[in-house]
Image (tube, chains in turn cyan, yellow, purple):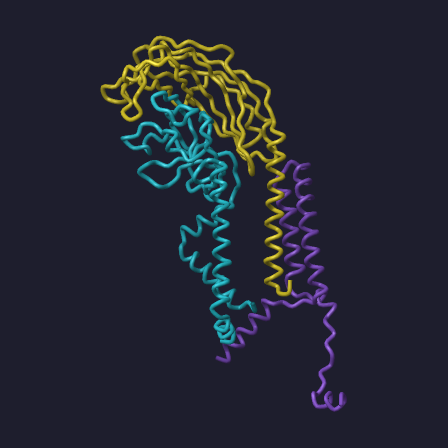
Length: 183
Length: 195
Length: 98
């Protein structure tokens, strides 16, 4: 095809330049993400809701903005995103019990707490999720507190994760588009 | 703008920026004009403390109570309110010489602290999605979740307070919290009765 | 091979949707202006009516309108075609210059 011949004529230098532009876009994106994490003091300042345990307020695909400042004590009613040590998926549930823990310090300013969480849409609290070894959630398990909310925007990541074929289709489509463009 | 594709992508990119601005304005105005609620009435009665044997050989003290509630949350429903989460909190400090569980086993170890640990427990909650359902008037309401003393006793703990709190969950923007009603005086824990 | 080339040409022509240069600058300006106004109007309308759906509806209508009116190569976007000179046989040109 004519356009394929045109693509071959691009030359190594052009291709390298395109790759460099792409890499610098990725790098600046990563920088912005990490900076946001530093500002909010959490490894994951923006998370996508994965389960329906907080419906009807939080649906799958909604975006949540988190902070985790050490001088802020968690109170009942706060919505936390936490990760259990034996599992990797972040869970978004509300704190329904909070007891001060003076035996260890979480940071230099705030003492640790024993926390119990429960999803608004669940009938049972999370004690079953914690497992038999862990009776309470500690501050160290928590990624952050939900402060802000943006609906629907994260649904793309859920769809891409659930249907990996779509990921390849998307990449393929973008590739085809690059082919058909005159530049 | 020399090709249709070019125009589509330009329009979409400008539109997404404009949409972000629009949603940002909505979120900002909602946050700056947070509604407040007239303090309502809450009354706690029939506090009932008992010993429960949920775990074998580890008796726990548990408590239940009834409450009267009268609060109007309708002003909280703005154009950006998606849902209200309303919850009743019981909070109290442990009494002196309280034993505390170690973080892993939950067994009391007879430790003594000079500062009293605080406890906050949600005993009742409700999700309100419509403005017309936001007027809550409950008589002799039952608690949904049992108050459980964590390896400690209720009797001997500091008197407790009850607060009705709400969480405004917006369509877009910042989550906010507030208190709708507070018990007028702190209440003492009664002696445990056998169930 | 020839079929592929024709397909490629047809696809490219539809994707290009040529409009004249005057229209191109106009479309760009109109896009900026319409979206800015739509944002403000959508916000105010929703705020006054205390309904978020009105804001989103107004905004959506504006974007849809822009897409329908200015993306396909409508005739009113081609009112100022570039005036190309008539093609002249090359041998005549050279003989005249001499």
